[in-house]
Image 1 (tube, helix red, strand yellow):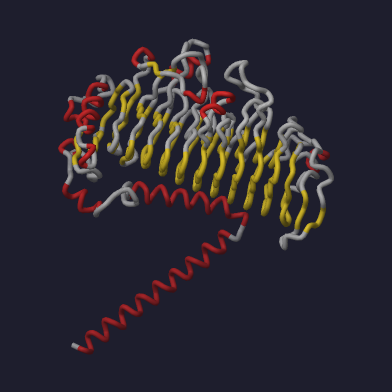
Image 2 (cartoon, one colour):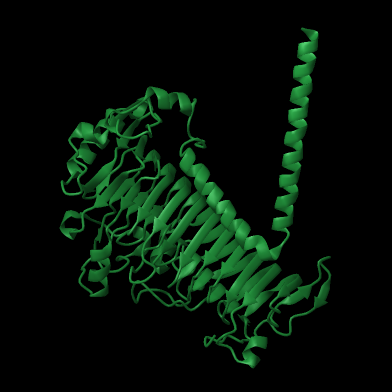
Length: 522
């Protein structure tokens, strides 16, 4: 018996040593990859694919909002409507319902608005008991806009698709948002979102990567042809709410902004795929946290017809009066694409202020701009304490943009003397390939950009359309910028920035903070 135990122990020790060896080899391999700038892009793609595989394998395994063992819940909570699929619904609430229990038909033709409304009403009765879960089974569930309730989980099966009805007569009108004044596109009321909620607590929208489809094509056409009399509605909009989790779903073809949390606290958005055509799908922003606090956005793929991410906080005098900043926001581990706008934007509606934002581990590819901050006289407010880390640009026209003359205003009542404050903005670990202009910071005499810091930057240029003279100059463009460069960066920085070595010792003072070499021809 003793000899048998000793043999077992020896075998386990041998297995443990083998595992240690494999892990050590893996660690060395990863270190070698990460240390090589040439293979960083491939590594990021590998990480994204691995994340997608793990997400698809177990869409709910990492939920921090859950209690208990998910695997056991799967075994005990099979819905009758899911018998045709191997994917079962985890029970995330004390009670759960299937949409078909309320008379829904998933053929893409029958309108299911009343079924959604009855289901939400039923779940609202269980708020004090922990809420309820609405399971959307496989099928194409056509609906007009409907409202959510507190303590609800909307769970979409992998083969479930919620379809927005395209005729605007089914979309109710609601008042304009207070921080936007008369309205974003037209004066007066605006169309509501397809999935809408306000003054809510504890809302979860999740699933096995099911889809919410806004079918926005008719909206885009009418907008471009000036055939609409009201501002278009977002796909999903949550207002004046807290404790929101949106994860593991696909959002596509929104009529307007795709996901719009407005004046919300404690918002988690992760593992989303957000899609719209990169051309001729106007204003289909991916995620727009607006006057929101304590927001996490991570592990998403976004390719849309406007900004992939746009942090906002109100528009001119209306945003100043509303006075709700966006703050404490983390955006990380994203792959983004925007052919007509930017991957990650701040503004231009930022009149309530934006601060304490971290953007890290971002791959922006085939985009007009990768990173952008935009504002104008009349906005007021501030953008400060913004940190960008580990950015990769692949085939982008402009890598980093800060623009202070984005002159779109809600009406003539704005105060041109309400000048925004831009300061304390840092960039570290910037890599790129085939970028025409790596940096363009266009401050002005009235709105200088203060305390901008660059460190560890290596961006390869796309010089096909440049003369030899322009290849040497105007690829790092500045105007009215105060800040510094730490260590060696490429391309060479503009003359507006002080230069320091890696030890933090001043090497060269800026020639002038007000030098202007903005060149929009490249």
